[in-house]
Image 1 (tube, protein in one colour):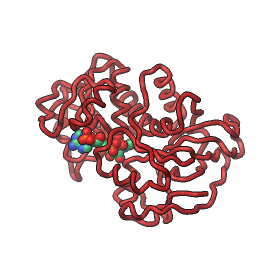
Image 2 (cartoon, protein in one colour):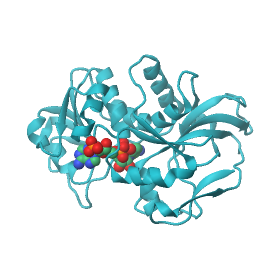
Image 3 (cartoon, helix red, strand yellow):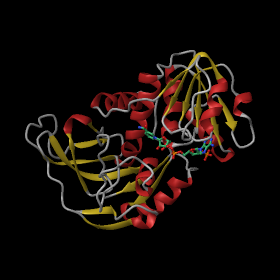
Length: 308
Ligand SMILES: NC(=O)c1ccc[n+]([C@@H]2O[C@H](COP(=O)([O-])OP(=O)(O)OC[C@H]3O[C@@H](n4cnc5c(N)ncnc54)[C@H](OP(=O)(O)O)[C@@H]3O)[C@@H](O)[C@H]2O)c1
């Protein structure tokens, strides 16, 4: 099969379009002909070597979420048939979606409804699992609460804003001015230009903060929380960072892969509560160009690789 091969750690030039062995479905697996694979921030981190992936062997195939069509079934798979359109996210520590085919446990993928395109399903898979685990399972965000979502125009936040509004929360978010109309369109009630405004002054008495940006942004998240508030994070704080308050919770969601969360996403899409983020498409062979945009850290929505 054709695949985008990571030939070693370094810059985007380490990505080479080439040949890789076709995957084989083990017991409980399906092999999927991939139509679209999304680009996640984790991908450039693995590429650079700044993400924990100690046993990486080159050439390595990046990519965690995809949409495609079942091509073959491993022993014991009864819930899919060859030809079913499916989408999903690889298990933690496993990658391989920047390719024409992937083998994956059938138990962690779901059927893709015809009304949702492959590109859109790929864009929604990991972003939605992350937003659901963060806001519903970890923060347990409730109607009437106020949530600050840091980095509103990013992939995960694009879903999180919509999910928080659907739950019935008031949503405050941060974004550059060029993204303000976008995040308002997703449902944000208040938008803070983090480049010119002090977030701690512009947002107050939040029940929940969802930090999708991390780094220096993390310390500023605490001042806006009510006593007893919850800070949920998915992007790391600087090394050695210690939470400055003991009267709030600091929580990291465990983003498990399971079919139940993908079905929850489909329920939200069918109800009109969540729509796909802005998507910029690249051919698989141009993954390096997508990486350059991703690591610039100012994209709107998602980057998706079209495979076929
Ligand atoms: N399972 C997990 O734990 C999990 C899953 C998915 C992602 N992640 C991590 O979560 C992070 C976000 O991922 P993503 O894919 O959603 O992000 P992304 O799409 O790469 O996010 C980029 C966004 O960050 C915003 N941004 C950059 N600097 C900012 C700042 N100082 N303040 C506010 N916003 C800022 C940019 O907004 P403007 O252009 O408006 O400035 C841009 O829209 C990454 O670190 C990723 O690795 C973790």
